[in-house]
Length: 299
Image (cartoon, rainbow, N blue to C red):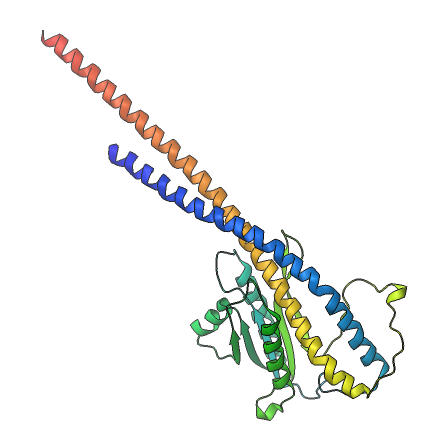
């Protein structure tokens, strides 16, 4: 009986120690997700202004730019997968990977060769464990992405997209990431990044947001050359910021659940330890009473 009580007490100490860790991680994620949300909000005005500029050039010019032109024979499709660098975030990374697997299956059904580009150690580990090939990898920034990384990824994608398919280039680019909707809801999403699809968002433009007429100097082609790579980088950076906020929100929720479960385990083991101790005391009293009765009878 004493050994059982010691075991329960050891479990209580172990679970209590784990609860302190999960509680600390929950508080850290809660503090960081606020900053991540602010970063998403702060990136919106620039992305919106750049989108309107690209929309204006694409609408009022007849230029056939390599980044906006649909290719007749699409043979190689790039899939950019954004996951986390660390675990303990619930089903965050696995939901992105499942969405990417569905996209890969659909692209292969269409007869396209899939070329993965991986962001985050979870995606890299997923592909390396299964001995799958991929074109490039980036990691170490999932919780706090920087524009420098987004520019590096964008430049690689644009370079590969403008390379002939026979020379190892790609014909289209899809991005799989997690859109931050709220602290409770984060949704895996797929967008096609290239050839360029200019997307303003779900909101309908107001009357004052209608595109004005533009004159282009030195010319529409030069303006597109300057704007489109910046637009690609801005969209990638926004996807990375959305993914970072989603990861932190998922980690906070997972750590809160772990903390709550640890509290329940502590209560359970405390109750079992008390029951075992009560049974031990009852047994000791019974032994004492039995011994006293035996002595009395012997006299």
